[in-house]
Image (cartoon, rainbow, N blue to C red; front, side, top):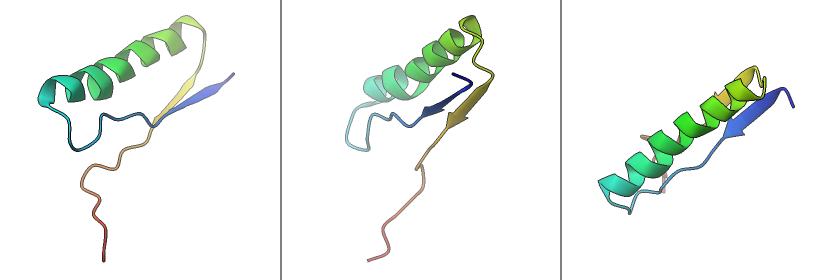
Length: 54
């Protein structure tokens, strides 16, 4: 594999501890695993600030 796309997120209705655990720590752990296994591309998708236009 030569790329990983990270789209996980704790969602907007969780507390700060869950946001840090999933959004920050999960991404860091995955980046470290990518480096360990020679995956050269890491793409992080975020929806922060996105709003529905209804």
